[in-house]
Length: 425
Image 1 (cartoon, rainbow, N blue to C red):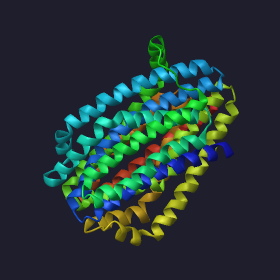
Image 2: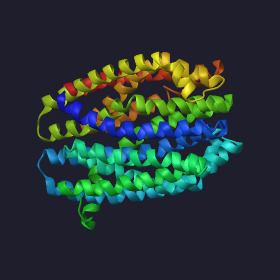
Image 3: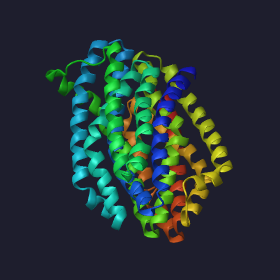
């Protein structure tokens, strides 16, 4: 439990700082009192989550295999595989980022964006998307630091980017009156700083070297065996989110603004749960590589207990302070009902989101990555499309309730399957 708390706690601090800056960004934009700008952030974020999902999937593969090699004391092989696979990660991210930038307007139109919201969201993506390799590289560096147990430096890597964004955002958005363009420029600078600091942090662990051509194929084959299913798994959530955004867009910019507010609150409120899923993976893979199957089981139990405690504490806090939150983000019209429902009731459904995420981490690191792919896509399709479609007949509130019901079913089933996998090791 102590190992899980330390690794997840330090990861949560870094993640919370990053997401808090994103939330602050949204707060800045909301106080420009232009619904088109807040809706644009919601539309751009829906596509941005797809990009990040691919980056996270590759990072999961990297962390799982390198952690296993480190646990088995095969340090040289771990270094060579890590260095080689990071070349592949950057290349994939560059292609995806450029494609998103080129097709931004068409993709946003499919989501339901139009008018000024469409123009602002497309402009934001044109600046930020080509720099996706920076995101991918930063995530990989943080994962490598966790793989060797350096929780403090892994946290510091993400904190550096958050601090720089926090300083630049108000200057560019308000001081220079650049609006969303200012937020995009701030994002680029902070991501560059993360990569630079990550290089410095990894030097002491000797986990990176000049990539060797001969290592590309075996590294890609071995890490890709985990990374590809993990990418497929992680893509399910944003794809389901795209579907939800498309239906929500039918109810106007205020509904999209309300959804965007929730999307910014969730990562900050549940930073510990998200960090837990990223941190417990290397713990499981290290102990699996070292033959300590009892500690693999312990890590899963500890993670589920901590998820429950985190969701309960967050529910109490958001329900108690939902009125100040509405004022803070200048919610109007239907956005007030959307945010209130989430803070007072639907936040409880994130316990089942946590179950799903922790279970997926166990599957990815214990040799069953296709299980996580199946459960995540099941949630994104069978657990989202029919529920959201039926819910849409009752307005934006019905959409959110339907989405929550779907995750309860699939989160529960995933957790039960994870316990069965652990028993069969």
